[in-house]
Amino acid sequence: MGQLHGQLSFIISPMGLKQSKPFYRERQVDDNCRVHCLNAVCGKRQLTVEQFERFCDEFDRQTNVTVGSSRQFFMPPTEDSNIFQFCLLRLKNWQTAYIAPGSKKQCQKRLI
Image 1 (cartoon, rainbow, N blue to C red):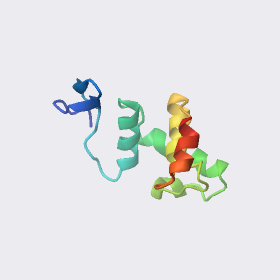
Image 2: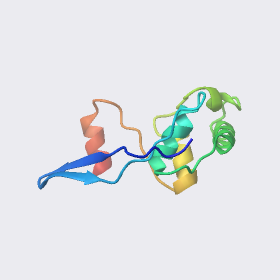
Image 3: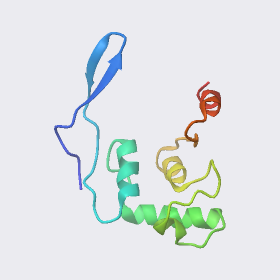
Image 4: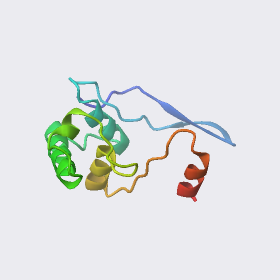
């Protein structure tokens, strides 16, 4: 696991194409894609598999589902409550929201 170097991203703006700093990503290990995804969002290795499993169990208890369920499945009990949101709140104190595909009005409300 670790940062892969040489990956570049670009920002398109009215001023033209600008190079941004390389983005963080990890090589896929086993079935830990959700952990790798959360670390990519955070921009560094911030979450271990063990921490993720503890967060999953805590999330399951808070949402009244069988403990261990979130370790195996992506189960959003409600639109605004899923394991990704739970982990980002714990790790970074980031508030997140789910916006369904094709829901332009919902997206506009959330962003304004």
